[in-house]
Image (cartoon, rainbow over all chains, first blue to last red; front, side, top):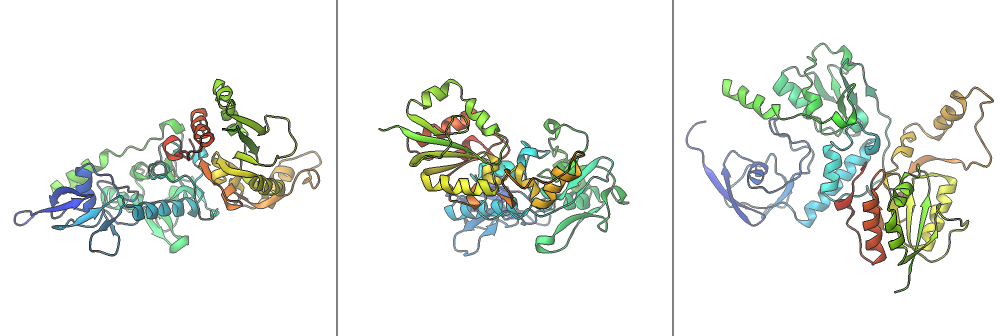
Length: 239
Length: 177
């Protein structure tokens, strides 16, 4: 990086904090132990601000800003837990739950799911919009892994880890709006993918039961993610 | 303080929530010092009574009978509680929704039956096209997620409700718990 790195001072929830000018509100909040909920964000992948759970209020800005992609600025006053934000975050979760078939009790990651635990953390006890109950496929053609579109929340962590870390870009996104889907290669069955290296990174970064490994009991379906920041770090050092 | 009148109802669920209710064991005795169980699959009463204070509803709304029952229960209940994931989300019963009622009947009564396959038309209430969580049909006051909610969760919720507090369920339980 050229030149000295500037430090910005700001307030998050009335606390004085500081961060480097190239850091985001989310990063600075986490360094200071301030909780901002996230789903599409994952340390080690490019943040995209898609899930809108990390929305925060900034004094003097009428729009809500996604903390994962908003840089800190001098004198900023950020609020992370206002009533308005909590209402919107619960609404986001309710829409995610209603959009596909998230049947927690029979899900392969029941108890290890970020969507499920986020609902509990944010105090969402029911979905007030009507459930859609769409008919969605399960692709078990891969020898080791399964994609169950019923549980997908379109966070695109799989797409990003496959592209940015593994370098295979097997995963991508197809369709728009409610028809949006993650796909392998050119919407071919995963088992027939010529680009997939069977590395399993996508499975491990998936926040829900949308991607899982075959032949493991539910109790062992923990996702392992600690590799990710190290891989990112090593790659950046080599550049 | 007069005794609270409590009821429990069983719609489309596996009865697991009621089993968990029984799992409160000796705490049931304690709870029902301050309350009366006026209607439940666990007691022998045919008509849902008038003026019930708290009703726990297990199960989703899946049939014409469920629909009729839940409307009557709502009319006669002060605090209606969605009790367990089937009531709160539709849960396992709702897994037929992407396919519809007809496909479900076909699979259950025709495709997998070898002796006189036929869809029952009498005695058994007709299925609704879609299984729905209770709050999509009538107003619900309290939601207790869980499959099933633990005995501790139910106990805490009932304690609060009997003493006119609103239980904070997110602290105690979650979907699929």
